[in-house]
Length: 484
Image (tube, rainbow, N blue to C red):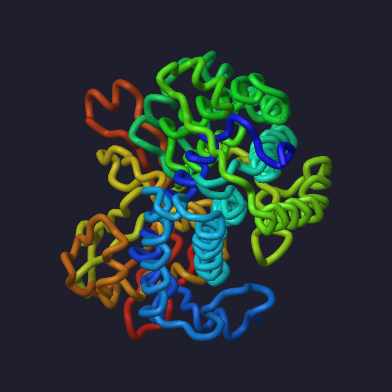
Protein backbone atom coordinates (compact mmCIF):
# COMPACT_ATOMS: atom_id res chain seq x y z
CA UNK A 1 0.00 0.00 0.00
CA UNK A 2 1.97 2.99 -1.32
CA UNK A 3 -0.23 5.50 0.49
CA UNK A 4 0.59 3.92 3.83
CA UNK A 5 4.39 4.13 3.69
CA UNK A 6 6.29 7.44 3.86
CA UNK A 7 9.09 7.37 1.32
CA UNK A 8 12.45 8.77 2.40
CA UNK A 9 11.78 8.40 6.12
CA UNK A 10 14.46 5.99 7.32
CA UNK A 11 16.47 8.71 9.09
CA UNK A 12 13.31 10.07 10.66
CA UNK A 13 12.36 6.68 12.10
CA UNK A 14 15.93 5.94 13.24
CA UNK A 15 16.16 9.21 15.18
CA UNK A 16 12.61 9.10 16.53
CA UNK A 17 12.83 5.57 17.91
CA UNK A 18 16.29 5.84 19.40
CA UNK A 19 15.94 9.46 20.51
CA UNK A 20 12.63 8.98 22.30
CA UNK A 21 13.97 5.81 23.93
CA UNK A 22 17.10 7.62 25.10
CA UNK A 23 14.99 10.28 26.81
CA UNK A 24 12.99 7.50 28.48
CA UNK A 25 16.29 6.07 29.74
CA UNK A 26 17.21 9.43 31.28
CA UNK A 27 13.75 9.69 32.83
CA UNK A 28 13.97 6.24 34.43
CA UNK A 29 17.45 7.00 35.80
CA UNK A 30 15.91 10.04 37.49
CA UNK A 31 13.16 7.81 38.90
CA UNK A 32 15.76 5.50 40.43
CA UNK A 33 17.81 8.32 41.92
CA UNK A 34 15.09 10.70 43.11
CA UNK A 35 11.63 9.15 43.35
CA UNK A 36 12.00 7.19 46.64
CA UNK A 37 13.24 10.25 48.56
CA UNK A 38 10.61 12.55 47.07
CA UNK A 39 7.56 10.29 46.80
CA UNK A 40 8.43 6.92 48.27
CA UNK A 41 7.25 5.22 51.45
CA UNK A 42 9.11 7.81 53.54
CA UNK A 43 9.09 10.48 50.87
CA UNK A 44 8.04 14.08 51.12
CA UNK A 45 4.71 13.32 49.41
CA UNK A 46 4.27 9.56 49.88
CA UNK A 47 2.52 7.74 47.05
CA UNK A 48 0.34 5.60 49.38
CA UNK A 49 -1.30 8.74 50.75
CA UNK A 50 -1.97 9.96 47.22
CA UNK A 51 -3.48 6.71 45.97
CA UNK A 52 -5.68 6.53 49.08
CA UNK A 53 -7.46 9.76 48.10
CA UNK A 54 -7.20 9.78 44.28
CA UNK A 55 -9.10 7.02 42.42
CA UNK A 56 -7.55 4.82 39.74
CA UNK A 57 -9.73 6.27 36.98
CA UNK A 58 -8.37 9.77 37.67
CA UNK A 59 -4.72 8.71 37.70
CA UNK A 60 -4.19 5.28 36.07
CA UNK A 61 -1.13 3.65 37.59
CA UNK A 62 -0.10 0.16 38.58
CA UNK A 63 0.87 1.67 41.95
CA UNK A 64 -2.82 1.89 42.78
CA UNK A 65 -2.68 -1.88 43.21
CA UNK A 66 0.30 -1.70 45.53
CA UNK A 67 3.18 0.65 46.16
CA UNK A 68 6.57 -0.08 47.62
CA UNK A 69 9.97 1.43 46.98
CA UNK A 70 11.14 -2.00 45.90
CA UNK A 71 8.40 -2.24 43.26
CA UNK A 72 9.12 1.31 42.11
CA UNK A 73 12.78 0.47 41.56
CA UNK A 74 11.83 -2.69 39.68
CA UNK A 75 9.57 -0.67 37.37
CA UNK A 76 12.33 1.87 36.75
CA UNK A 77 14.96 -0.80 36.05
CA UNK A 78 12.69 -2.63 33.60
CA UNK A 79 11.94 0.67 31.87
CA UNK A 80 15.64 1.52 31.70
CA UNK A 81 16.55 -1.85 30.17
CA UNK A 82 13.76 -1.64 27.59
CA UNK A 83 14.74 1.91 26.64
CA UNK A 84 18.41 1.01 26.21
CA UNK A 85 17.42 -1.99 24.09
CA UNK A 86 15.72 0.39 21.66
CA UNK A 87 18.68 2.79 21.73
CA UNK A 88 20.98 0.02 20.48
CA UNK A 89 18.34 -1.11 17.98
CA UNK A 90 17.45 -4.62 19.19
CA UNK A 91 13.60 -4.58 19.00
CA UNK A 92 13.71 -2.80 15.64
CA UNK A 93 15.34 -5.85 14.06
CA UNK A 94 12.28 -7.99 14.68
CA UNK A 95 8.71 -7.83 13.38
CA UNK A 96 6.78 -4.56 13.93
CA UNK A 97 4.90 -5.94 16.93
CA UNK A 98 8.17 -6.16 18.91
CA UNK A 99 9.10 -2.43 19.02
CA UNK A 100 5.38 -1.71 19.40
CA UNK A 101 5.19 -3.78 22.58
CA UNK A 102 8.41 -2.29 23.92
CA UNK A 103 7.27 1.31 23.42
CA UNK A 104 3.80 0.61 24.82
CA UNK A 105 5.49 -0.93 27.88
CA UNK A 106 7.70 2.16 28.27
CA UNK A 107 4.64 4.36 27.97
CA UNK A 108 2.63 2.34 30.51
CA UNK A 109 5.48 2.11 33.03
CA UNK A 110 6.26 5.82 32.89
CA UNK A 111 2.57 6.72 32.95
CA UNK A 112 2.36 4.80 36.24
CA UNK A 113 5.15 6.98 37.61
CA UNK A 114 3.87 10.32 36.33
CA UNK A 115 0.29 9.78 37.51
CA UNK A 116 1.40 9.38 41.13
CA UNK A 117 4.21 11.93 40.91
CA UNK A 118 2.09 14.89 42.06
CA UNK A 119 3.82 18.30 41.93
CA UNK A 120 7.23 16.72 41.32
CA UNK A 121 5.94 15.35 37.99
CA UNK A 122 3.60 18.18 37.05
CA UNK A 123 5.63 19.37 34.05
CA UNK A 124 4.58 19.64 30.43
CA UNK A 125 7.52 17.59 29.24
CA UNK A 126 6.27 14.58 31.17
CA UNK A 127 3.15 14.55 28.99
CA UNK A 128 5.30 15.27 25.94
CA UNK A 129 7.44 12.21 26.62
CA UNK A 130 4.41 10.02 27.23
CA UNK A 131 2.72 11.14 24.02
CA UNK A 132 5.94 10.68 22.05
CA UNK A 133 6.42 7.18 23.45
CA UNK A 134 2.87 6.21 22.54
CA UNK A 135 3.29 7.44 18.95
CA UNK A 136 6.68 5.74 18.63
CA UNK A 137 4.95 2.39 19.14
CA UNK A 138 3.47 2.82 15.65
CA UNK A 139 6.68 3.49 13.71
CA UNK A 140 7.16 -0.14 12.72
CA UNK A 141 10.45 -2.04 12.54
CA UNK A 142 13.37 -2.30 10.13
CA UNK A 143 11.42 -4.95 8.24
CA UNK A 144 8.67 -2.52 7.17
CA UNK A 145 8.34 0.97 5.80
CA UNK A 146 7.61 3.90 8.08
CA UNK A 147 3.86 4.66 8.31
CA UNK A 148 3.02 8.08 6.89
CA UNK A 149 0.19 8.58 9.39
CA UNK A 150 2.56 8.05 12.31
CA UNK A 151 4.96 10.68 11.01
CA UNK A 152 2.06 13.08 10.52
CA UNK A 153 0.97 12.45 14.12
CA UNK A 154 4.51 13.33 15.25
CA UNK A 155 4.47 16.50 13.14
CA UNK A 156 1.11 17.44 14.64
CA UNK A 157 2.69 17.00 18.07
CA UNK A 158 5.60 19.32 17.19
CA UNK A 159 3.13 21.78 15.65
CA UNK A 160 1.11 21.96 18.89
CA UNK A 161 4.25 22.15 20.99
CA UNK A 162 5.87 25.02 19.08
CA UNK A 163 2.79 27.02 18.10
CA UNK A 164 1.34 26.64 21.59
CA UNK A 165 4.55 28.03 23.08
CA UNK A 166 4.57 30.93 20.63
CA UNK A 167 0.93 31.92 21.10
CA UNK A 168 1.01 31.71 24.90
CA UNK A 169 3.94 34.13 24.89
CA UNK A 170 2.15 36.71 22.76
CA UNK A 171 -1.06 36.35 24.78
CA UNK A 172 0.53 36.09 28.17
CA UNK A 173 3.14 38.79 28.68
CA UNK A 174 3.74 42.19 27.01
CA UNK A 175 7.50 41.61 27.35
CA UNK A 176 7.27 39.13 24.47
CA UNK A 177 5.38 41.66 22.38
CA UNK A 178 7.72 44.59 23.03
CA UNK A 179 10.75 42.29 22.57
CA UNK A 180 12.17 42.82 26.09
CA UNK A 181 11.52 39.32 27.49
CA UNK A 182 15.13 38.16 27.19
CA UNK A 183 16.38 41.19 29.07
CA UNK A 184 15.18 39.18 32.09
CA UNK A 185 14.70 35.54 31.12
CA UNK A 186 18.32 34.32 31.06
CA UNK A 187 18.72 35.58 34.63
CA UNK A 188 15.35 34.51 36.06
CA UNK A 189 14.77 31.17 34.27
CA UNK A 190 14.23 28.18 36.58
CA UNK A 191 17.64 26.56 36.19
CA UNK A 192 20.40 28.68 34.62
CA UNK A 193 23.25 26.85 32.89
CA UNK A 194 26.98 27.53 32.74
CA UNK A 195 26.56 29.93 29.79
CA UNK A 196 23.44 31.71 31.05
CA UNK A 197 25.47 34.51 32.63
CA UNK A 198 27.06 35.28 29.26
CA UNK A 199 23.73 35.15 27.44
CA UNK A 200 22.31 37.62 29.95
CA UNK A 201 25.24 39.97 29.36
CA UNK A 202 24.75 40.08 25.58
CA UNK A 203 24.04 43.63 24.26
CA UNK A 204 20.35 44.50 24.42
CA UNK A 205 19.93 44.62 20.60
CA UNK A 206 20.89 40.94 20.48
CA UNK A 207 18.19 40.18 23.05
CA UNK A 208 15.70 41.75 20.65
CA UNK A 209 17.03 39.53 17.85
CA UNK A 210 16.62 36.49 20.11
CA UNK A 211 12.97 37.30 20.75
CA UNK A 212 12.21 37.93 17.08
CA UNK A 213 13.90 34.65 16.12
CA UNK A 214 11.84 32.88 18.77
CA UNK A 215 8.60 34.32 17.37
CA UNK A 216 9.51 33.29 13.82
CA UNK A 217 10.38 29.75 14.91
CA UNK A 218 7.31 29.25 17.08
CA UNK A 219 4.67 31.17 15.10
CA UNK A 220 5.61 30.63 11.44
CA UNK A 221 7.91 27.60 11.20
CA UNK A 222 5.34 25.13 12.69
CA UNK A 223 3.15 25.59 9.61
CA UNK A 224 6.13 24.84 7.35
CA UNK A 225 6.63 21.49 9.11
CA UNK A 226 3.41 20.41 7.38
CA UNK A 227 4.55 21.61 3.94
CA UNK A 228 5.93 19.37 1.15
CA UNK A 229 9.64 18.60 0.94
CA UNK A 230 12.19 20.11 0.98
CA UNK A 231 10.41 22.89 2.91
CA UNK A 232 9.50 20.60 5.82
CA UNK A 233 13.12 19.50 6.27
CA UNK A 234 14.37 23.09 6.33
CA UNK A 235 11.65 23.93 8.87
CA UNK A 236 12.80 21.02 11.03
CA UNK A 237 16.34 22.41 10.79
CA UNK A 238 15.12 25.77 12.08
CA UNK A 239 13.49 24.05 15.06
CA UNK A 240 16.68 22.11 15.79
CA UNK A 241 18.90 25.23 15.67
CA UNK A 242 16.53 27.15 17.96
CA UNK A 243 16.38 24.30 20.45
CA UNK A 244 20.17 23.98 20.51
CA UNK A 245 20.32 27.69 21.36
CA UNK A 246 18.02 26.99 24.30
CA UNK A 247 20.17 24.02 25.34
CA UNK A 248 23.19 26.32 25.52
CA UNK A 249 21.37 29.05 27.44
CA UNK A 250 19.64 27.06 30.18
CA UNK A 251 18.55 23.78 31.77
CA UNK A 252 15.02 22.73 30.76
CA UNK A 253 15.30 19.02 31.55
CA UNK A 254 14.67 17.05 28.34
CA UNK A 255 12.21 19.52 26.76
CA UNK A 256 14.67 20.90 24.21
CA UNK A 257 16.36 17.58 23.45
CA UNK A 258 13.06 15.79 22.94
CA UNK A 259 11.81 18.61 20.70
CA UNK A 260 14.93 18.18 18.56
CA UNK A 261 14.20 14.47 18.25
CA UNK A 262 10.55 15.07 17.36
CA UNK A 263 11.49 17.62 14.69
CA UNK A 264 13.15 14.81 12.74
CA UNK A 265 9.68 13.54 11.87
CA UNK A 266 9.75 16.20 9.12
CA UNK A 267 13.22 15.31 7.79
CA UNK A 268 13.46 13.68 4.36
CA UNK A 269 16.29 11.24 3.52
CA UNK A 270 16.98 12.70 0.10
CA UNK A 271 17.15 16.29 1.34
CA UNK A 272 19.48 15.22 4.14
CA UNK A 273 21.63 13.22 1.73
CA UNK A 274 22.01 16.36 -0.35
CA UNK A 275 23.61 18.02 2.67
CA UNK A 276 25.58 14.93 3.76
CA UNK A 277 26.33 12.93 0.57
CA UNK A 278 27.80 10.02 2.52
CA UNK A 279 24.42 9.49 4.20
CA UNK A 280 22.43 7.03 2.08
CA UNK A 281 19.97 5.16 4.31
CA UNK A 282 18.81 1.74 3.22
CA UNK A 283 15.18 1.54 2.19
CA UNK A 284 12.88 -0.86 4.00
CA UNK A 285 11.39 -3.24 1.43
CA UNK A 286 9.38 -5.67 3.55
CA UNK A 287 5.59 -5.84 3.27
CA UNK A 288 3.41 -4.16 5.86
CA UNK A 289 1.29 -6.67 7.80
CA UNK A 290 -2.43 -6.01 7.59
CA UNK A 291 -2.79 -6.00 11.37
CA UNK A 292 -0.13 -3.28 11.67
CA UNK A 293 -1.92 -1.15 9.09
CA UNK A 294 -5.10 -1.50 11.15
CA UNK A 295 -3.27 -0.58 14.36
CA UNK A 296 -1.84 2.58 12.79
CA UNK A 297 -5.28 3.55 11.48
CA UNK A 298 -6.77 3.15 14.96
CA UNK A 299 -3.97 5.28 16.42
CA UNK A 300 -4.54 7.98 13.79
CA UNK A 301 -8.27 7.97 14.47
CA UNK A 302 -7.66 8.29 18.21
CA UNK A 303 -5.30 11.23 17.70
CA UNK A 304 -7.83 12.89 15.40
CA UNK A 305 -10.66 12.55 17.92
CA UNK A 306 -8.54 13.74 20.83
CA UNK A 307 -7.22 16.73 18.86
CA UNK A 308 -10.43 18.73 19.09
CA UNK A 309 -9.79 20.25 22.50
CA UNK A 310 -6.09 21.15 22.03
CA UNK A 311 -6.91 22.63 18.61
CA UNK A 312 -9.63 24.80 20.17
CA UNK A 313 -7.19 25.75 22.91
CA UNK A 314 -4.72 27.09 20.32
CA UNK A 315 -7.45 29.36 18.95
CA UNK A 316 -8.74 30.49 22.33
CA UNK A 317 -7.98 33.90 23.82
CA UNK A 318 -7.88 32.10 27.15
CA UNK A 319 -5.28 29.62 25.99
CA UNK A 320 -3.96 27.23 28.61
CA UNK A 321 -0.52 25.67 28.50
CA UNK A 322 0.69 22.23 29.52
CA UNK A 323 -2.78 20.75 29.97
CA UNK A 324 -3.66 17.08 29.70
CA UNK A 325 -7.27 16.53 28.69
CA UNK A 326 -7.27 12.89 29.73
CA UNK A 327 -5.49 10.85 32.43
CA UNK A 328 -3.44 9.07 29.75
CA UNK A 329 -1.57 12.27 28.78
CA UNK A 330 -2.35 11.87 25.08
CA UNK A 331 -2.83 14.78 22.65
CA UNK A 332 -2.52 17.56 25.19
CA UNK A 333 -1.81 21.29 25.03
CA UNK A 334 1.73 22.56 25.42
CA UNK A 335 3.53 25.85 25.92
CA UNK A 336 6.25 27.51 27.96
CA UNK A 337 6.94 30.85 29.65
CA UNK A 338 3.66 32.55 29.02
CA UNK A 339 5.02 35.08 31.50
CA UNK A 340 8.59 36.11 32.25
CA UNK A 341 9.75 36.69 35.81
CA UNK A 342 11.36 40.11 36.24
CA UNK A 343 13.30 39.31 39.40
CA UNK A 344 14.76 36.20 40.93
CA UNK A 345 14.01 35.19 44.51
CA UNK A 346 15.65 32.09 45.90
CA UNK A 347 14.98 30.12 49.08
CA UNK A 348 18.18 29.54 51.05
CA UNK A 349 17.97 26.68 53.56
CA UNK A 350 20.32 26.79 56.52
CA UNK A 351 21.12 24.65 59.57
CA UNK A 352 22.98 24.98 62.83
CA UNK A 353 24.34 22.68 65.51
CA UNK A 354 23.89 25.31 68.22
CA UNK A 355 21.01 25.44 70.68
CA UNK A 356 21.14 29.24 70.82
CA UNK A 357 22.72 30.21 67.52
CA UNK A 358 24.02 33.55 66.40
CA UNK A 359 24.00 34.58 62.76
CA UNK A 360 27.52 33.27 62.28
CA UNK A 361 26.45 29.77 63.39
CA UNK A 362 24.11 29.11 60.45
CA UNK A 363 25.43 27.11 57.48
CA UNK A 364 23.88 26.77 54.03
CA UNK A 365 22.70 23.62 52.28
CA UNK A 366 23.81 23.69 48.63
CA UNK A 367 21.50 22.24 45.99
CA UNK A 368 22.74 20.57 42.84
CA UNK A 369 21.33 22.89 40.22
CA UNK A 370 19.58 25.91 41.68
CA UNK A 371 21.57 29.06 42.53
CA UNK A 372 23.15 29.04 45.97
CA UNK A 373 26.48 30.55 47.09
CA UNK A 374 27.25 33.58 44.90
CA UNK A 375 30.64 32.23 43.83
CA UNK A 376 29.25 28.95 42.50
CA UNK A 377 28.84 28.95 38.74
CA UNK A 378 25.61 27.39 37.40
CA UNK A 379 26.05 23.80 36.23
CA UNK A 380 24.73 21.89 33.22
CA UNK A 381 22.27 19.14 34.11
CA UNK A 382 19.77 18.90 31.25
CA UNK A 383 18.45 16.57 29.93
CA UNK A 384 18.52 15.18 33.48
CA UNK A 385 15.70 16.65 35.58
CA UNK A 386 16.48 17.87 39.11
CA UNK A 387 12.98 17.74 40.55
CA UNK A 388 13.75 19.07 44.02
CA UNK A 389 15.59 22.07 42.56
CA UNK A 390 12.69 22.89 40.24
CA UNK A 391 10.34 22.71 43.21
CA UNK A 392 12.54 25.19 45.03
CA UNK A 393 12.24 27.58 42.07
CA UNK A 394 8.45 27.44 42.23
CA UNK A 395 8.64 27.97 45.99
CA UNK A 396 10.74 31.06 45.35
CA UNK A 397 7.94 32.38 43.13
CA UNK A 398 5.64 32.23 46.14
CA UNK A 399 3.79 29.01 45.33
CA UNK A 400 2.03 27.99 48.54
CA UNK A 401 1.30 24.54 47.03
CA UNK A 402 5.00 23.74 47.39
CA UNK A 403 4.81 24.02 51.18
CA UNK A 404 3.10 20.62 51.24
CA UNK A 405 6.47 19.00 50.55
CA UNK A 406 8.80 21.74 51.80
CA UNK A 407 7.92 21.40 55.48
CA UNK A 408 8.49 17.60 55.41
CA UNK A 409 11.74 18.33 53.55
CA UNK A 410 12.93 20.48 56.45
CA UNK A 411 12.00 17.71 58.87
CA UNK A 412 14.07 15.22 56.85
CA UNK A 413 17.03 17.59 57.11
CA UNK A 414 16.53 17.73 60.88
CA UNK A 415 16.63 13.93 60.89
CA UNK A 416 19.72 13.95 58.64
CA UNK A 417 17.85 11.53 56.39
CA UNK A 418 20.44 10.00 54.08
CA UNK A 419 18.11 9.64 51.06
CA UNK A 420 17.10 13.28 51.26
CA UNK A 421 20.66 14.50 51.72
CA UNK A 422 21.71 12.62 48.57
CA UNK A 423 19.42 14.95 46.60
CA UNK A 424 21.68 17.84 47.60
CA UNK A 425 25.16 18.76 46.46
CA UNK A 426 26.52 19.69 49.87
CA UNK A 427 25.45 19.02 53.44
CA UNK A 428 27.24 21.58 55.63
CA UNK A 429 26.93 19.31 58.69
CA UNK A 430 28.41 16.25 56.94
CA UNK A 431 25.58 13.91 57.96
CA UNK A 432 25.21 15.21 61.50
CA UNK A 433 21.74 16.11 62.74
CA UNK A 434 21.17 19.85 63.05
CA UNK A 435 19.46 21.35 66.05
CA UNK A 436 17.65 24.00 64.02
CA UNK A 437 16.89 24.62 60.34
CA UNK A 438 15.42 27.72 58.74
CA UNK A 439 14.62 29.09 55.28
CA UNK A 440 15.30 32.64 54.16
CA UNK A 441 14.43 34.46 50.94
CA UNK A 442 17.15 36.20 48.95
CA UNK A 443 16.89 38.32 45.82
CA UNK A 444 19.47 37.25 43.25
CA UNK A 445 20.87 38.93 40.18
CA UNK A 446 23.73 38.06 37.89
CA UNK A 447 26.94 39.92 38.72
CA UNK A 448 28.34 42.53 36.38
CA UNK A 449 31.57 42.05 34.42
CA UNK A 450 33.35 44.18 37.01
CA UNK A 451 31.94 42.21 39.96
CA UNK A 452 32.90 38.94 38.30
CA UNK A 453 36.49 40.11 37.76
CA UNK A 454 36.87 41.76 41.15
CA UNK A 455 34.99 39.41 43.46
CA UNK A 456 34.84 36.18 41.41
CA UNK A 457 31.07 35.89 41.94
CA UNK A 458 28.44 34.89 39.39
CA UNK A 459 25.56 36.07 41.57
CA UNK A 460 24.89 39.01 43.87
CA UNK A 461 22.24 38.45 46.51
CA UNK A 462 20.57 40.25 49.40
CA UNK A 463 18.10 39.00 51.98
CA UNK A 464 14.50 40.11 51.56
CA UNK A 465 12.68 38.02 54.16
CA UNK A 466 12.16 34.75 55.97
CA UNK A 467 9.80 32.04 54.77
CA UNK A 468 10.28 29.50 57.57
CA UNK A 469 11.36 30.57 61.04
CA UNK A 470 13.93 28.41 62.89
CA UNK A 471 12.43 24.93 63.26
CA UNK A 472 13.48 21.85 65.21
CA UNK A 473 12.24 18.33 65.80
CA UNK A 474 9.74 17.85 68.57
CA UNK A 475 8.61 21.46 68.51
CA UNK A 476 5.70 23.20 66.80
CA UNK A 477 6.35 23.84 63.09
CA UNK A 478 8.12 27.06 62.23
CA UNK A 479 6.01 29.95 61.14
CA UNK A 480 5.55 30.74 57.49
CA UNK A 481 7.14 34.14 57.42
CA UNK A 482 6.44 37.15 55.28
CA UNK A 483 8.75 38.75 52.74
CA UNK A 484 10.35 42.08 53.29
